[in-house]
Length: 101
Length: 194
Ligand SMILES: [Zn+2]
Figure (cartoon, rainbow over the protein chains, first blue to last red):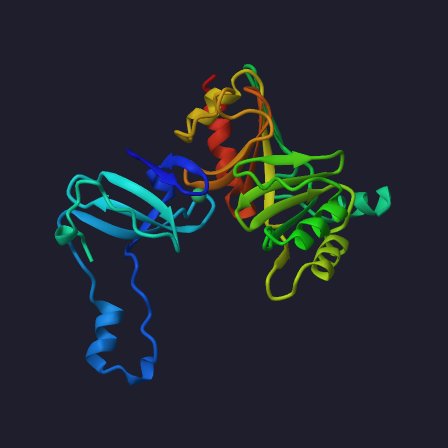
């Protein structure tokens, strides 16, 4: 069991939350001009890093708000949770070259 | 709304647990009588929206997370940055919904009558905390969860709105009708072990 910090409600049990994959994916502008490959890339393809990952989470059993989290996919350590629209938090020791996209 | 109308409303609304009561060692469980319950979504950074709700309910909005405020007849719970739950024992659902809809910005707000979507079970007594601890790791110690605070949490497999009515010994659990029997079964089973 671990505790997740909802940016709205505060610390809660993990079972109140669910994860919905990679965060910060913007819907492309002028989708009618996309090739099938570009559209498929937007719809289906995601990062699957071993390590730090920016993810979308929802506090399903609590306030039902969506928020983002920066989680290590290996250790499950959550470094930060933040509201949608806020800038990605960057870890001090994280080199720009290693930052997940 | 006259008292008789409220009574008619209460009579007409059969609650899923029929006002059932359970007693055990230093523990009382009881389904609370029905009342008007309205879910409000609005932009609370808009002073007009805040003023409209305040003038209708007569109470200041609980805009701090995990808090609730009440007067004799009305209670407002914080559910999210743009969402509140309103209980009323003096205004009918119809009057409350139309009163709110008329005064909130259309398209930027939502007012929904959920009076028969939720019911409330009150857990009280010196063993109340122990019973709550059986279904959730959420800390209800009066130091961190006192009167005037609420939290939407998971209890067993039910999503509930938990509010502290009286520090350490009286809590209200708002639950969906469809989960009321499950929650009642859970609470009475635990209560039976006391
Ligand atoms: Zn939350």
